[in-house]
Image (cartoon, rainbow, N blue to C red; front, top):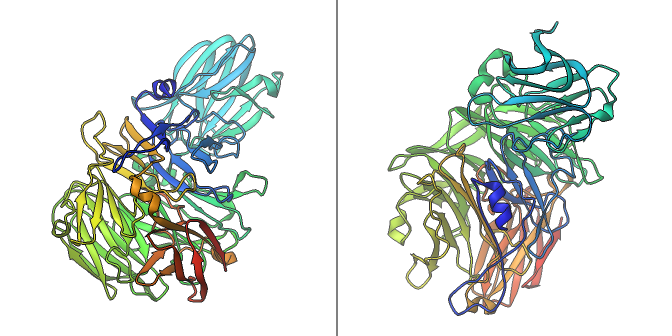
Length: 612
């Protein structure tokens, strides 16, 4: 573990596993091996069952650096599988996006790899070892500059289509560095004979090429949306890409930067399909992703946040095709698509500094159904939804750096409430997640940085537990964070998975994941977890409601409300802490189309899968 931390340098990482017999009202942890966790330049952290094996997995998004797909083993272990399943932006060359390592160049041949540096402009490096090589590179960037050419000639020019090109002729032991204004855009490589393709080695792992002509790409990944978008009963991934630091609005770049649609291949991997999907990025500086039925047709659509402007709504056809439309106008810090009025069609709640707007779709587009002014300044960190007051509809906690707000759902209208009235912090929160962490049947709230707030049913108030406080990163304060609570080892005890940093592009991130042993009295508390399998057009049953009915209590949950990542969507499992309830009288599933499935006399303390 110490070796892993030293390699990550700027990233503090703690992964802990349940173990031992905890003392009363205390928790204990054991570290587990996380070798291979690619978390440098972390942007987002979340949970999804991306391989469909029923075990929850963990993922990260990391700009143009390696993202992670960590496969859960059901016992709390996480194994990195991203490269093996083709998650890399250039699947033919795993490791090309590892900009912090140079390849081993002991074998003779041509080496092409990229490197990171903190100053503007990241170099693509061309090296030869014991061999000569020549060729041409065509960049989708606007400008390229040769910074170094030793033992080689390197000439820049313009292609017939107006793209910058680099022509090189390198002898043995040559070194060429070329800087592009946007290295994350595609690069076409054409190497001249007689060098053999197998002697052309790419990326930090020096992967041999299969041909002398190939394409390289780094991408700029911000948000992942996990769902079965093409109806083949396998999980696909929509990837929201950034906007080239704002330059995507330049007509030169608008059509060159795309999002990604990675469709499951059926053999455990993914294949890029965005070119035939109909997804239109335009000038969207992609940020967050939420999967929801926004068109009201029972299928899966995508809400994509765009920095500095209103979001995009990608309406899915259930076969991997999409029609891109405009979402609600105006930018926001956080969005949440959820059904507030119970008509099976979600509204979009948009929160920005000082205001929350509820948008409803209509014949003429999105209209503002409600506008609320918020007290306090500062950006909004998260919108966490749950039925916190137990009245059967979805409420929201607005986590804000300046001020926190509870939005209580009253017949489809949101009513603001000062959280301090019920013992919650009035502000300074970058992330929030509703969770019954001790399975006593009451929803608690985890806040970054304040930690766990436990609900006291006798007093109808929350109180600080002193557990899981999240100290600031070395830079001094927390400006962005995530907080998820999956059950990674299937024992009914949910675990905190959090990240925090000064900002989205901060050089230092703190990632903290734990498999917890909670207070001793949890051993007497019962629980239930539910996975739904919906129709072909909405296999994840996004938007479905499940009501657990006991003798004296009712608990409502909605698919999607477990999501705790900052920019992504994929945590669809539902959770109930049941206290001393040993069996449920009924479990009522209300599917997205309004049809119902009822299970009676339900045994608890298990994961239950319900298929439509």
